[in-house]
Each structure stands twice: as C-alpha cells, then as structure tokens.
Image (tube, rainbow, N blue to C red; front, side, top):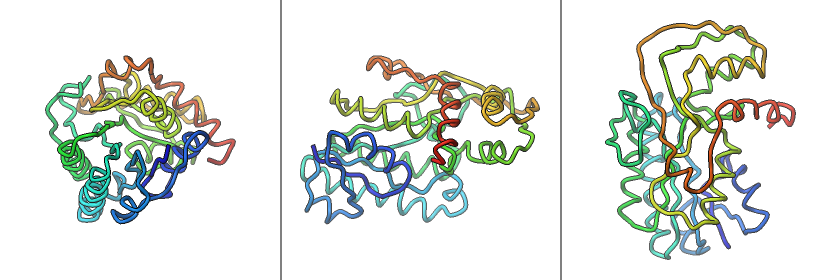
Length: 254
C-alpha cells in the first residue's frame, strides 16, 4: 500500500518508521504531488503546533486549515483516505470525558484552525479524523512541551491538581494509526489516555527526570477524552506508561 505523509517532521518520521515496514511511505507536500503519486492513504502530519499557532494565528490558519484542505481535496479526487490529526483543544474544558459527538468550543487559535480543518475534510467523505489528547515527545512543541522542557532542565514542576486531560506520545500515536489503518477504521475517533491531572502528570515526569513537584490549585478545567470508541479496536492508552516511554526516548536521543 502507498501511504503519504505531508511533511518530514517528527510525527511523520515516527509514522513512517512503523508503517514503512509493510508499506511504501512517501511525502506529498502539495496537491499536485497527491494527484501524481496517487497514494491510497494521506496522513496529514504537517501542522503549526500550539505554541507557534498562538504566536502566529495567520500561519496556523494557512497550514492547519487551508493547506490541509487543499491536500485533502486532491486526495478525495483520487479516492484516497484522508487521515487528519486534530486535537483535544477543539473543546473548552468545561465538562471532560469528551465523546466524539460533543459540541466543540475552541479557546485558542490552534484549536480553531484544527476544528475548521477537520470539519472541511469530513465534508469530503472517506475520512479518519483522530482527535488527539495532549501529544508529546521530548521535542514536540505541543501543550506539554513547557513541562517536559522544565523537567529536562531539572527545574521544580508546579502543576495544577484541578486541570485534567488525556495524553498520548508520538510513538503510541504512530502505533495506533497503524492498527486503525489495518482495521480499515473510518469516522472520528478520540486518541488519548486515561484521565489524569497535571499534578499526576508531573509526578510521572518526576519518575523519569527526578524533579521536585509542587502541587498548586488553580481553576478547574477538564479536557479529558472518552476512549470508548478507541477501546472497540482493543486499544487502551495508559498515561503513566506513555510518560515513562520518555526514558527510552532520552536514551535513544529521540
């Protein structure tokens, strides 16, 4: 099977590492290449992450939304499956345990740009929208990056016990995508771990890096994702295990 990713960044390389064993993985960074190469699946890996999106909303809109839509339209014309990586940040964190059908309400431009991208791709048909919990690695500049960066530097971690979320590291994401593709999954699926607080997460980071953790109590938000649909594919993501995977990432200088 020919599978396309839309850049050569960390997420794309991790996916290619797993899927490339049994498939041909190529890069298509514009609509013309999609039409020329005719991949069966296009995985939308290129994005402007959270931190950059907040600093430069116009760049986020250009790539997280319009670029993704243009690639998806070309893929749709040749009958390819569009796999779009969305985010938990399409929600406002007021209820938690979000199911795939719950009403979005983004609080920042990253979430908005991803929401418009996913709804536009849904309108084309033949899609797999993956709404990710807080995606992380040692280098991915997402929601958890400031905490991981501080942990790497040995700093004290001050973490809110009233802020809840689901998480997933880049390797677990790639493994999950592989399973979902092999099982011909379609629709919208949440990809995230069990619900944890930021304080719990920081304690898991402390197990890896040895930081001191200080509990703080700020306003409550709950961005956790309900993984009921993911579990129907026999996939369950454990938050602590995903954080402890950073030990391997660090040893491999990943």
